[in-house]
Image (tube, rainbow, N blue to C red):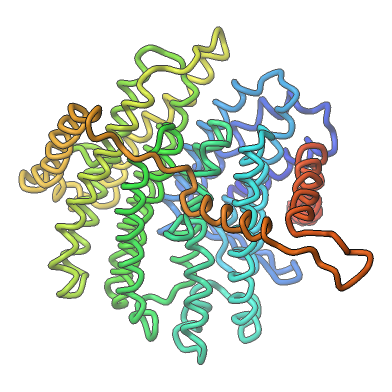
Length: 559
């Protein structure tokens, strides 16, 4: 029942908004509660099989899903509270809640699905519903971010669908564990590994597939940015953990490649983030950097089956810590209280790894895992690189605090209280959840992180970053920082396309196309696409509506 509620409640509320527009006020009151069954599933566990469906459906609470369900339950609830305050009594609230609830439903399905068809269906629903969150404000910048997001999302979906069809041809709608074992022994194992890794790497923001994040996160409303960065990118991690073989066969050969991609993401994204002028853009690059560290852990885990099993709790713990802290920072962007900066500093320093914070516990677990599981060559290099990444992360978050310390325009009355309640829930969870989780599940890891040597290992990178940051601040007028545009690689790509269109000769082979240039065709299509995006947004959820209706009918029949 808890698994049915976790996926069915947000779906039913979204359908209610679509079918009965007048239900907006009532649904807005219930929507923040739609994520609470995820917390119940994390605590109570459970399993659900629906063999009556055409391909069947298997939902289950696995060990690695529990921290992800805790993260999703807390952060979607906090974002829902903040969204209710922002959109209360506004005409745009109905549209926001439809996409919010559909994305929540898909996100819950990704964390719970244990079969190929269920995982892909939930992942697709989450991916395409999130497009509505990205373009919600319908500004030119939001629509541009949405187009980049949609192009990359569709490309990732194609890669994943190819992989799942290759597996389905052999296995049907197989359990994920069976599918992962099949990849390890498949004649085209390397192709399957490339498809699965790359498809989910788009969601994780692994460089160079990261460009949608720094465009989409700043344009989305604050509650949507919180879940995009805090929870939805973690769906890529769950896809990797579900489908990649546990360090067997060709997968072990990918270990060093994945580690390198993780390191590139961690360092390059932090450096790019330092050049940003907007706080939300900087946070987006910070997410890319931190997910690079998770990718690094995955790469170490791919080296052997034993390393894979040791990696699972460490990677999900790191994702839990990052999601709660980053969600709290994004939600702070909508808060207008004078003391906002001090609580932001708590979450920011947790991501940097301040001793006794959730980040320090997560990074201590990651360091212990690397020391024990990494190959000899990587075991020598990675501890120093992790310390250097902590220095860069601290510099990045110090710059964020400099940009964001001043509070936003203060809200009034009950609206202000609701915004603050959602934000304070996220801040409190970011402080308490990880230590309590370790105390209950891994007390040895908690004791390891509290050793004096580990406390110093967590502290000195922050002290070094503070010194470097203070020197940079003193010299800022002389040296300055380069300013790079959000989306970095997208900008030169757009310029190249613009140059090509400006130098395209008229096409004269057919009389009816004489005089038509690529530039003119591009301009016409751009005008039409903006018109469709602005005026007919509900068309984009037609396919999701059909899928949602089928799921709801099945859900009601099961009840």
